[in-house]
Length: 117
Image 1: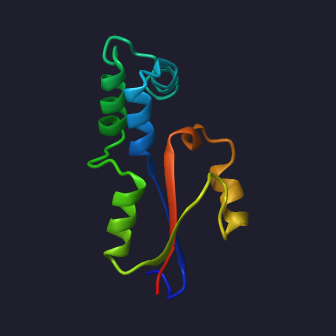
Image 2 (image 1 turned 180 degrees about the vertical axis):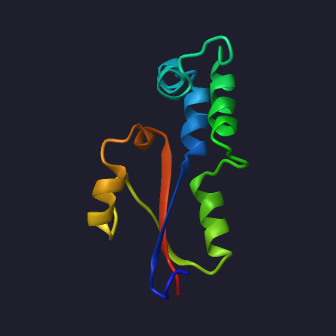
């Protein structure tokens, strides 16, 4: 459905970010996520690991990606010019202003853009 030269933007939870926060025992990150997205439910999500699993399964994720793995998956389908982007930063800036403005997902997301050859 995407025309040649079209841009595809993929936004997923950033596995490397989640792993860093887990390894560093950054409870502030996990507390923020539990409060923002898991109704601050400390019964179902009492630990950092349970918050991570809640993030995956409550949103229907079947896989978690780091930049290398997502780039590999995208390139294997033929897309080119794969670039990491920041939240609300895109070649299609006008569209991003409305879609991504002030969304808390910016603090946990990996964003890659690529082109269809």
